[in-house]
Length: 344
Image 1 (tube, rainbow, N blue to C red):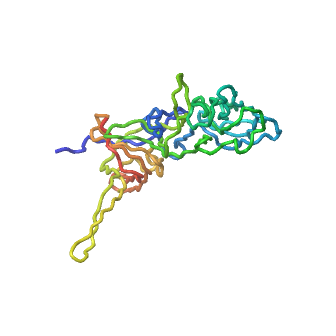
Image 2 (cartoon, rainbow, N blue to C red):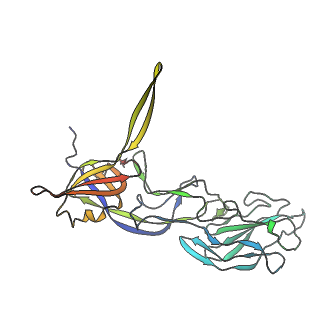
C-alpha cells in the first residue's frame, strides 16, 4: 500500500531578484521565456515585463520650419532594455530621398527609430520604382537594429526635393510604430508540459513582426523583450499533513424531457488545503505570509527532488488553540489554476 508517510510540503518563503534580462523567443514569436522555471507573484515581487517600445509622445509631423526633406519628432519616452528612457525632440530630422538614376528610383521608405542608446536615427530603405511592404526589398522599409525601436515611417514617391507632407508620414501602432504595450501579453509564471517543467515567461496575443536584424546576411527577428522578476526560494513546513491540491472536478446535471434525458457537464476548481502544526501559533514564520500569493510544493517522498505537485495561490490560515493538544492551522490555497504534476 502506497502512503504519504514520508511526504513534505514546501512553501515560498523568500524571493531572489533577477534584474532585467532579455527573454528568449521560443520560435513562434509569441512565446518568450526567461532564465528560471518560476516567477513569484507575491505582492511587491510580481514580474515586471517591459518589451522594447515607445511609451509616451514621439509624434512625427510635418516640419514647422517648412524646410524640405525633414520632419519633426516630438519628445518621447521609450522602454529600452527594461529602462524608461527619455528622448528629446528632433526638429528638422533629415529624410533621404530616392536617388533617381536609371531605372528611375522614385520611391523609398525610411524608418524613424530610437537607438539602443536613446537617440533618434533614420534608417533608409532601398530605393525602388514603387513601394513594397517587404522589409529589405526595393521600395520597402529596411530592417532595423535589434536594440532599436521603430516609431514611424516616411513614404516618399519622388526623388525631387520638397516639403514632406502629413500623408507621407505613417505611424500606425503595430504596423509602423512599436509600442512597448502592444501587442498585449499574459504571464506564464511557470510552464509544465507533459510533466516537464520549463522556464517561465510571457505569451503575446499575436506574433511580433520580424522587422529587426542583428546578423549579416539579414535574418528578420522580433524586437527585444525584457523582464525583471523574483525567483522563489522554498522552505519545508516541518510539521504538516493532509495536503489537498487545487484540482478541477467535474459534475453532471440532467433534465428529463419527453422521451429522453438531456445532460450537461460543468467544471469547477476546488480550493487546496493542508494542516500545519505550529510552535506558538503567533510568531511562526509561515503565519507572516497570510494573504500572500505563494508557490507550494508537495513531495510524496521527501528523499527525492521529483516528482512533486506544484501550485500557486493565495495562502489562507484558520488557527486553533486547544487547551491540551497541538496548536494547528488549517491552511488554504486559493489558486487561479489547477495544480500540476512535475516529474522531471
